[in-house]
Amino acid sequence: MANQQYPTSHGINDLKKQAQVVVVMVPLPAQGHLNQLLQLSRLILSHNIPVHYVAATTHNRQAKQRVHGWDPNAAANIHFHDIEIPPFRCPPPNPEAKIKFPSQLQPAFNASIHLTKPVSMLLRALSCKARKVIVIYDSLMGSVIEEARFLSNAEAYTFRSVSAFAVSLYEWELEGNVIEENELFPRDIPTLEGCFTDEFAGFVNCHYSKHGKFNTGCVYNTCRVIESAYMDFLEKETTKEGIKHWALGPFNPVTIPERSKSSKKQHFCLEWLDKQAKNTVIYVSFGTTTTFDDEQIKELANGLRKSQKKFIWVLRDADKGDVFKGEERRAELPKGYENSVDGKGLVVRDWAPQLEILAHPATGGFMSHCGWNSCMESISMGVPLAAWPMHSDQPRNTVLITKVLKIGIVVRDWVRRDEIVTSKIVKNAVNRLMASTEGNEMRKRAAEMGESVRGSVDEGGVSRMEMESFIAHITR
Ligand SMILES: *[C@@H]1O[C@H](CO)[C@@H](O)[C@H](O)[C@H]1NC(C)=O
Image 1 (tube, rainbow, N blue to C red):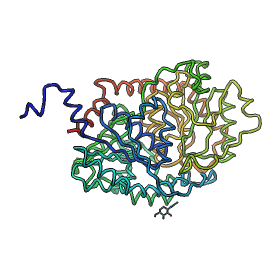
Image 2: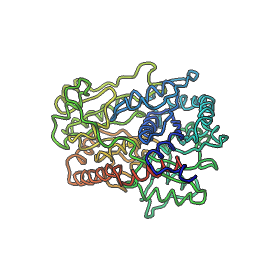
Image 3: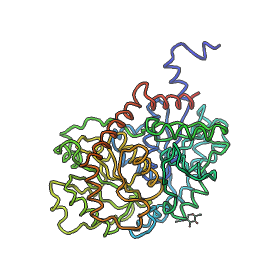
């Protein structure tokens, strides 16, 4: 009988076995989270495992529309379940808010609760057909996937959307420990003060799934090349509970498909980059949850100009809970600004192809809020950072980037977050990263780290092996 069950032809057997396993992704509806699970969907799909991606209709549309760095046709094989949920409030971001956490997204987070019933129905339906249903859910969506608990052939894995470093600190504190300097954690780790709104902290308390009995493992968009110490720490912390941890990142592609130069779809900033010398351009972008007030925009604009360095600056307002609803505020630049930086800098007002920009040889630095997506993209493309954290895990990611990995500088200290960042501070930071010995050393370290990270997804590399171990585990 054993022979029948395990035919000699390995490959075919693997395929058959995997075909009986389906994966269901349940993201939190914010761009950084939607994108990471969409990227992971692509990776899992490449192992011939069907993937179902479940979100509100508008959030699925957002995730698909903003795919970059890979062929969107690849997403055609992902089963998107567009869930119609009742309308939720969709206020604009508030540039004057003291706490920079995107509180305008809270109604969308709250509305996720309406996914519970459709997700339960989907899980039940899949559970009848498949040998095994694997749910990979954002750590804040635990209550939406409760149904999985009652299905004998379902397993749930938590997706931690932030760095293993940030998760380690968080878990350490949750257990009532005080963070002190030691071989893992450097000095002066910022507290969580100012990182979240009270309302969001309440939401986390309600929904954050610490490893309940039901949780079988955690997956991370990180790579052991970068964070093995923290992955080891997390493993040690949870040996008793038997929780497994997989560092499956980078989720983003590490090579960009060759651009066809004739293609009309080429973004203008990539054409501009083609004309610039190696490592001469700083890419400036603060992600999808940052909104600056007019004064801060003016200081940033002037600082970039004064630096005399080449730049691409993505100046967009933060996302609303529904990115397709209503108008976006168009930030005012100082009069004549764009002409005054002509040839030196580009201001991009729409969605920029970030991964392609970071992968471009002309890009030599990234001024960033240090959201984890951006950090991973920058690290895997070998670009050092100028860190200007805004909220959430970003202040702590900044510590990881600057003090632990030493591939970046701090633009503005987190403790001075209530102060405006003057043009002089901006100018000095740009020059320090782009034109100093210290900056060059960081660029060299970042380039080496990028190479190792890209190598980690090749045959025999650590991330490839980790992914193979995860696939073997869920198809066992
Ligand atoms: C979100 O839900 C919480 C808990 O039910 C509630 O207190 C809060 O007012 C809601 N916030 C928004 C913006 O809808």
